[in-house]
Image 1: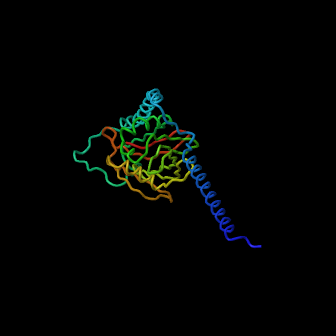
Image 2: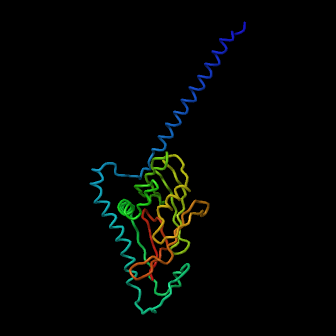
Length: 259
């Protein structure tokens, strides 16, 4: 005996409702999982959430920032003071193009190491003052981790519908003095992959100006931001050259020369 037409219509209607209901449940669950995944923060990322906490932590951050600046300036200044003083021609043409530090006469090398806390203090205190345009791109509260000899940086990001903690893995290389290549090897918001090109371009926009030449490119297959300081960096009356930045035993080692 065949099923009446009305019963068939009810059967198909119920099936369609079940499919729509199951699809809606899956969409809601997927959205919930995505929201929870975006909210995941790296274990090393610590930010001040209340005004009371910020007020109590501020002196510590400021002291760590001063320590970082002093530990950078001290070896650079001593290297400059060690350069033999000799009269220079009144009209000395500034050097152009890449510099081979090993062939430069009267050069003095310098090196320093900064701890994670010192750098994070500097990021918390100096970056908002010196690079306010960086925050116009929706990035704020940067903090770094130097664990396992890797340079990781996390920050709050708000771009369009994306709001969470951006987690980056960076590699910094100097193919020649004062030419810095920042390779964006990983970018996640929570547990969700994020466009490394977007992050690179946001940082590039925030760092423009101040005599720096910026180039967005690819290095070793990674999106990269190239910063060329040229021969414009100065330490007192000497030219300052950055040659290497790397993570060593949980500290950031920075080295270069003055002449």
